[in-house]
Image 1 (cartoon, rainbow, N blue to C red):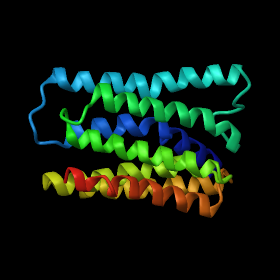
Image 2 (cartoon, rainbow, N blue to C red):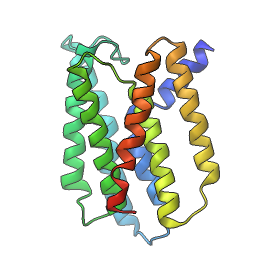
Image 3 (tube, one colour):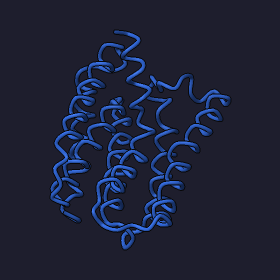
Image 4 (cartoon, helix red, strand yellow):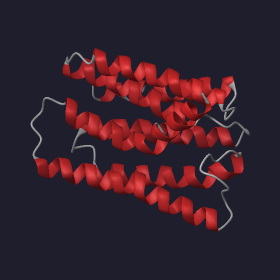
Length: 201
C-alpha cells in the first residue's frame, strides 16, 4: 500500500495538472485546431509548468529553502507557490490570452485562483493538499468540457473520480495531510473551476 501511495502521488503530482488540462482540451474539443496552434500552446505550457518548476526546485533545494519534493512544511511551500502563481500569470498573458482559446484561458484562471487560495491559507498556518487541489480541479474541468461541447465523457470522468479517491487515500495513508487539509484541497480544486465556468460555458 505504501508503494502504491507513493507511485500514485508522483504520477498525479500537481505539476502535471496544467499540461494535463491543456492536452485534455485539445483531445476533447470538436473545434478544428491547426497543429501549429496546438504546438504553440502545449510546448510552452509544458516548459513553463513542468521543466521550469523542476529546475526551480533544484535551485531552491541547493539554497536550503526546501528540503524535499513533498514540501512538507508551510515555510517550504511559500516560494514554490509564489513561483507557480507567477508562471500561471505569464501563461494567461502571453501563451493563451483571453481571445485565444477561452476554455483554456479560464481553466488557467481557475488554476491561478486555486494557487492564490492555497497561498492565502499558508498565512493562517494551513497546509492544503496540493495533490487534491490539482486532481479535483482537472476532474471539474472535464465535467465542464463535457457539458460545454455536449460530449459523453463518462469513462474519462469516472476514471478521474477514481483517481481523485486514490490520491486522497494515498495522501492520508502516507500521513502527508490531515483529513481537513484533503477536504479543503478538494473544495478549492472543484470550486476554482466551477466559479470560472460561467464565463465560457
